[in-house]
Image (cartoon, rainbow, N blue to C red):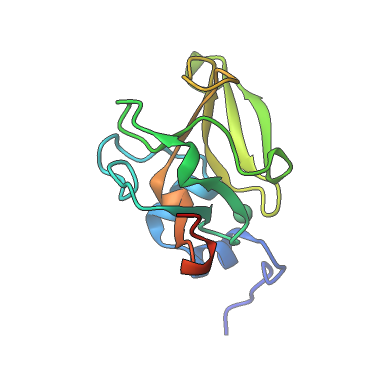
Length: 141
Ligand SMILES: [Zn+2]
């Protein structure tokens, strides 16, 4: 039998078992999905977007807007405590990376050219997100 030294929770092997290949590439290897291909780019249902890896609540459809970038874009997170940001200097660019605080998965990047009151554009990969429709009791109108 093969020895398995990576049985620890959160190891690459575990992630590979619980995520699709594309999710693993984006969430755990900081990849980026091709623009205009993600399932949530042109998506207008009301609800919440949670982390595809751990279910942490990340964004609300109320803050989603069409930035034209080809990726789902938001003006702010549901709760800033749920998303970590850190400086990312990969690809010879200075960017701000967005990560899930709960599982450390890569979500996308934050740019300072957004339309909201904070002026932020949260540019997030669709594969990093899972959509949760609001229950009817939460509808205000
Ligand atoms: Zn997560």
